[in-house]
Length: 249
Image (cartoon, rainbow, N blue to C red; front, side):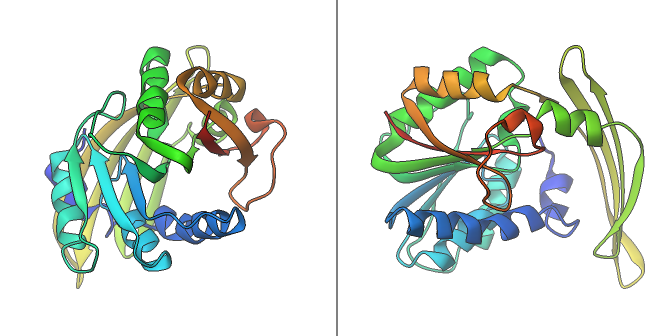
């Protein structure tokens, strides 16, 4: 998952906007809980935008990133090369990792968890997180719901992002709760095409009560479920993207 061109142009094509928007919410939440993390792990860290923002918002935070894509990690390493404390990056699978250290904060954002297509993989991911979370620390994860896929993942969209052309062709199989999207993009600079992206990836929808149950079984206690604006959510399956805030059981 993700070739060199997708990693290289990921931010330029506008996919960095999600991390930029949620980082202040995460920092505000931690402050509201009286938590000043000294170490953080971003699981499926991508190009490292969330890591940069959290390091900026939380002074002295030691950021770490885990991703399955070596190309993404190369971009992350370049982005975080300057600044202190310096980052530590791990190449690995979010469904099962053993890093030999624990963290005050673990994040997994931008529906990265939906990329795990089997329930056993999700359970294993939660167990890995619990094994790496310090007592009193927080795990924050968001997902696309079945509602989000049924509403937004059928059709054909053509968008201009930062002056670049992005074509997305998503399809959602509601019976199997399985989504696939094909992305084609042309990167334009000064009116001249300079790069192309052709990527396909899959996502799976999981019910909110399943995720809460699997987190509990893996050693995590969900304390809050909220929407993008930070409002409490009673029924996560009735919102497009719930955020789960969990501590170690």
